[in-house]
Length: 167
Ligand SMILES: [Zn+2]
Ligand SMILES: [Zn+2]
Image (cartoon, rainbow, N blue to C red; front, side, top):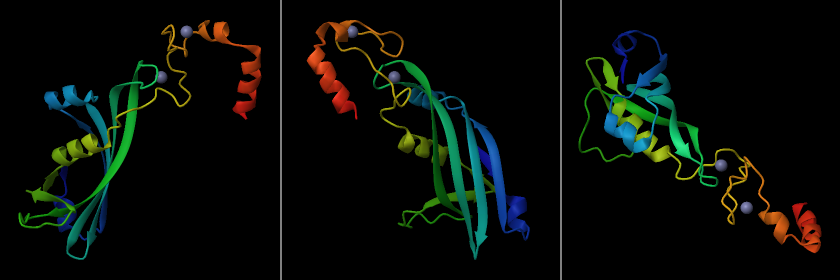
């Protein structure tokens, strides 16, 4: 996941936009995260005084399971990061800024992208905002079919109450 910036660095351009599709080759990572191999990367690189700054955004897809109805679905997350691009990394530097090394005019984004994915991957997601979930009584997926459990236990007085609570 290299971005090539040597031409940009030696030019008098102030900014550079990068749009790339990166392919993950790290099979362990793919298995662990259920990530789909291809991710979108959008970045802007700026020269600010002596510094080179990267604003990056990644968009990735992974196989998820709905926290409410337990059905598998494809989830998409977009997340961003800023990093300072440096020719020499100072190991003693304790600032919390992300620092990435420029090697032979290139920056390798694989590690930072992996970190961003770990940090941004949601623990619980819903297949859709109004997912109906599973009937706790009979276990049917209420998005697909309606069960009779509710009808049985419904008392007309409660219906009235439900209507009132809806508003
Ligand atoms: Zn669901
Ligand atoms: Zn039911």
